[in-house]
Image (tube, rainbow, N blue to C red; front, side, top):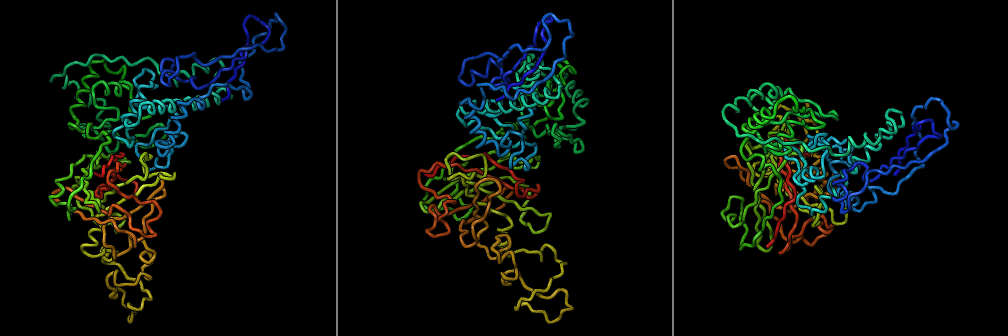
Length: 602
């Protein structure tokens, strides 16, 4: 890594100038008290400053006025210590590439392959606008970063990584800090080359942007009463209601924009999900210091400590009880015990033999109309394995022909690896995923007949196709009899003829088998080998979906690619889920997802 050099005049008319080389190494932007100990190294000195004398061309004792500072090219100056060479940072970089880059981007710029699906957008780590910091200057400590990575950020698509070993979490912290440090160094280089900052200001410039400041002092939390509730309500209406609504429901027209220009709707306090937690001390930091990079302003200095606490307690009183806890994504384990026979349907009493697991979900594109979670169960009989998934849904959405219709659906994702990346697999040898997806419209099509544009648009005009079975005799008839779709030949229904399952009216299962090896690689198995069975029942606002398949894969060429999951007693494998709520407009990447769970096949 290169150093920055500044040339400054010497004092007292002494011969020469002092060349100051600031070594922007791995610890240049890290707090001495935490960075090295975090990496298992002793605390060390701050950035190295190399000083040497060079001839200025002025004679000794000259009384010529001091020349102004100028910036020189430091391309020839190198340093020996670099974050890239630090084994802790290297480990963090490996983990980041596998688990984080798909959202945060390969370089930490927030432009990962899945970023376009998400709101709030993944954080641009290079800019250093970290939302959750407990310091006066809002530069997070290592503990702040570790807490955010471990717990995730409820109310966004940021998942928790607390299931990783502590050493790996610390490595991620070190790498994230190095991403910000590298970016800040580049900023300093640019400013220095333009003369916007002096050589002597580089250190303070980097320190202000990369070194955590003093901790925020938390005043004692008082006990609330009716008078303090009244004061909190008054403060809320004066300072918060214009965005978050008088009753805690956000104002639709109050959408503002973050530091990168992306829209940021105000948070619903009634739904009770706060990115940094809902405890008093957590909300105190958010309200006092604001949230960096977002429209949420700081209130420090605006209110007294007592007023801040009254406001916090009032906000807490608006929230649904238990909402924050339910929104916290966690990794759980559920088992598939062996039974004599699998249940014939999702409402069969045999499902009472399977222990349920609640799995919290989060929408990629945050919306209040979301599916909070699901309940999953599993059974097997030695030949087939079955899963039952149930979730709350206020409406049945079982059509997807019109442009404004979106289906209810659920998918279960089986990893081919014991240590999968965040989502949708990758292109490594065992990085694929096998997905079973049940679709409500497909089940209705099988039960009641395939619904095509005839059903969605009854006043349509039928084009003329030279299909022998439907030859027109009267060309003036704009609505000739043409029969149901499955009475036609696939050659004249091109999507069906091409094997597109969406347009195939002869399907016998509402479950589709798909495979993927990373973002943008999702593909369905050919119609001839779609043999995952399924059925569903909607009862009193709850969907119950059963999906099942043989433990072993059929011995045929179509299943020899190694992209479908086989199951064996004793398996302990990663499984995750996604739900589409058609009534909320969910489709494609707009969905509610879980983190990886563990399935044990007994």
